[in-house]
Length: 264
Image (tube, rainbow, N blue to C red; front, top):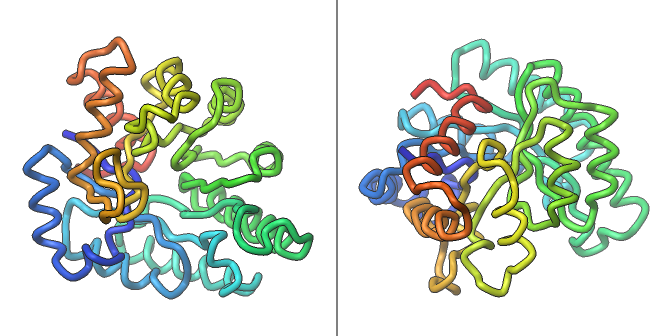
């Protein structure tokens, strides 16, 4: 069984026909999907969606791309939402998607950086309070992210979504108990650095993801990505590494299951 550890299944086009897209995913062996939320406007939607489908799980968080919609008071709302969802037995398995994104418009200004850092620090603290792993997003902010994780190390660990850095950067992340999210980037031959990095890391730190409907795999540019295309990522990962496809599927799924404590 394959696990898509990062898919925005509450977005278009999936939300219009969830049964159809889940069936496509099942047919190629995708047995579970984790949906990271992006802000308070979709927390209730992802929780409801996951209550209706046994193969869906979710995270609650404040995505840095949408931080202009949030202030520090959102952290209290996030805490209350997590507490409620856990108490009534919903399938909240992570804090996230959260992180730093200095590549957004205005992302290099001091005010935006300070707001992102404050919101991420608050979410890392909530992760420890509720003993949940974090789903991390990072663009143009690697040193700052590493520092924050060092000072607020998640007890339940986490995953660095859509990793595209060097072996050295990956090692820094892994040393902090954070797994490496492997997505569609590796399907592009031009992504030499990322492909090399992923080929060199221990298999048990890798987690598969599509980031659908974003990050289309090679050959499907311009189309919404889909969870069933996780198999394209596995195909390339098998080519890049020495293990068998079956072993890659088994170990990556085990890693995702253990990190998120999925009840499969």
